[in-house]
Amino acid sequence: MKKILSILMAAAMLMTLCVFGISAADEPTMTVSTASAERGQTASVDVVVSGNPGMNAAVLKPVYDTAALELVSMEFNDIDFRGNVEYGVKAVWATSADNSANGKFLTLNFKVLDEAKAGKTEVTLENVDGYLKTGSVSNRAEESINYKVVAGAVNVIDPNVPMMNVSTVYGLPGDTVTVSVSLVNNPGIRAAALKPVYDNTVLELTGMEFKFSGNTEYGVKAVWAASADNASNGEFLTMTFKVLDGAEGSTVVSVAYEEGDICNSNEEDVNFVVNAGSVIFDTEPTAEPEPDTTVPEPDDTTTAAPSTTAGTEPTNPTAPQTADAGIAVAAVALAAAACFVAVKKRKDRKSVV
Image 1 (spheres, rainbow, N blue to C red):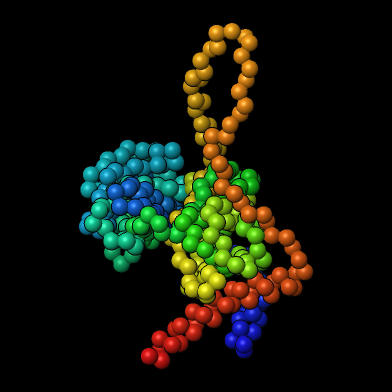
Image 2 (image 1 turned 45 degrees about the horizontal axis):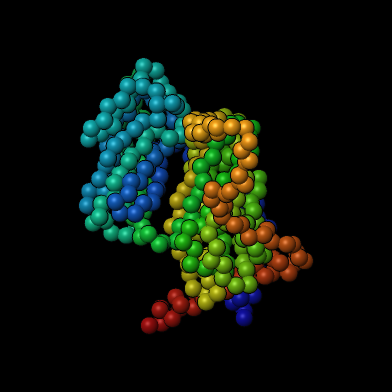
């Protein structure tokens, strides 16, 4: 009971803190994203540039496990990084003037091999001690730019693995955009605590909202708890952002959780593969109109048929009804604490053995 009370107090203090994101460092960095795919499917991994001081040439060599992945193709972002390109063992890009854009620079398309083991397999760029080799990226003055490399991965998943899919949306500076976190293959959860992951130099988090019924609280993490397991799929959480002035290219948006942050009614950890989304700082492409396939009727006496629904939208449980604020916060913290305490007890028993 003392442990639960201490966790409740810590949780209450945590809820009073301000929500924050992950700041982009000023240091030139190339971050490789993470994607998920089943064996036999294709996974697209992006190389995202940040802190770009201006470059006009780059030579990048993908590094990955050839026993798990086959590199099918590479493609530079020719909208924000227009230039001359060449693809072989390395991806080569060059332009006549320095380009200081940030955002998605290169996309690597992999086929997941049948022999690949389930789990994450690292994808990165050839580097020395975490930095691109000297001369890999340079500016028009032929000065080498020292880019840090942050590795990504391909999650090799089984068909029924629980997943959290973060959506990709479009927006321009000054716009408000909403990113969704949707559950797939949800085995049933009773409590969850998710931390938003985003770049607060280009996005301002203005709100979060759970779409499943239950008690909620929003702080550094978005915390949700229910009285019983919920095995629904579909939209679970929304995060609303304001696009800040100066935002260019694109930026990764995701959620993160730690051991004990998601559990079921049996106080067992429930793990989800998180597939990150993004905000692309542009207008959303207009879908091409579908061709008109209507067959003309022979006369004007035809009665219109009743409309039918082509598909069904995922059902979102009713948003939680707010009760007394103190009771709601305590209920959320108590449910979340149960997960943490259960995990701690299991760890203690293992350490004794």
